[in-house]
Structure formats: structure tokens, C-alpha cells
Length: 85
Image (cartoon, rainbow, N blue to C red; front, side, top):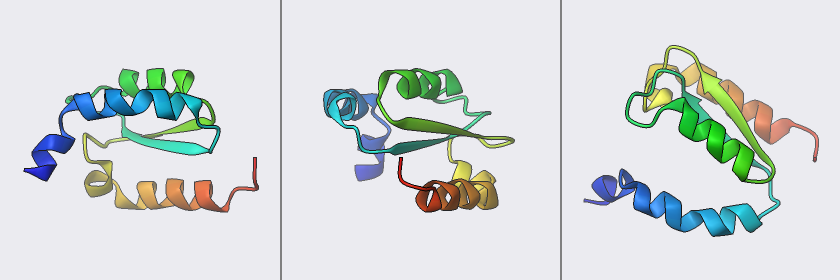
């Protein structure tokens, strides 16, 4: 049931005030072919939430770590090894 709850965007919306107030660097990794939550959602999050970078994963759907694990790993490695902002 926890996974079903995670699919409910209500929880994401509840986090938005805290995310908007945070200046901690954040990374969104999104599948370009996501039909459940289109990449336009990520684009909006990235513009509305400070210090947020968006990495689009080509040829990946809603769970990009399954469709393109190497691309996701590369995005995470680049984010965590980048010089402090």
C-alpha cells in the first residue's frame, strides 16, 4: 500500500511549500517518455522550486531507473560530484 500512496500526487503537493522554501540543491530525474506524469510537470517543478536542476532521461518512462539505469546513474554521479553551488 505504501507504493500506491506514493503514486498519489497529493503527497507531492503537500511538500511544495517546504521545497519552495529550501535553497538546498535538488535534482529531478525524469523520463522524457513518462505518460503517467509528463515531463511538463518536472519542468514546472524545476522553475518553481529554487536550486532545482532537471535531467531528462531519453527513451525512459515513469521509472527511468528501470528503463535507463546507466543514464540515471550518470545524472546522480554528476549531481553529487559537482562543485558546491
